[in-house]
Image 1 (cartoon, rainbow over the protein chains, first blue to last red):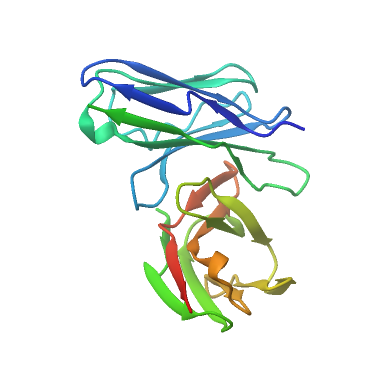
Image 2: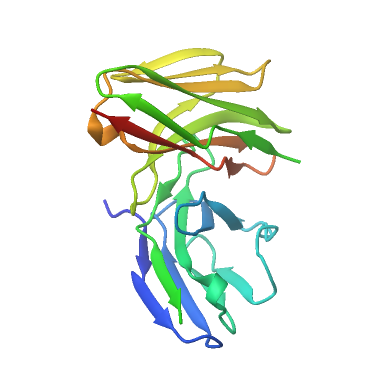
Length: 115
Length: 110
């Protein structure tokens, strides 16, 4: 079966532009996470969607960041007025939340470079 | 709040054994994951511990003590390909959310 996919794989944008990153989770996975990972750093939690519950947005670094997910399908992460410090790899992961198997499956990431 | 601690870096010799520790202070603990992340790649799942004790999976074993808020990942017969970052992550009950530590970068040397 297909794993988690993300698009685009690479994105180069000019400072001040908006970008939209897409994540297609594994079918049937109720939980979806977005993380940011700067070069040589750990995973920085951004946002968490769990079924139809209100998302946990506690990790979003500023109001320039937002994310949406419709039901248990595709999610988009939008960064408005990009800044150079937004340059990083953005990882998406999905998982089940019942049945005893909660491991996260990660997508390959989107490498964002803001020039 | 949630707090997960791991050493930042470790170095070990090919063929040896290395233990990577993780301590956590969280509320609503359900279980603990270990992930491996090679440079430039996404993390991949290694293990998930719910109950106290040691779980062995080939060259890798993971241990959990819930009462002490402590886990370790044990890698035996180290190979050069084991050079990677190892991420400890806690699965929290209630909201069913996973929180990651900052990871331990392991370098295996000849």
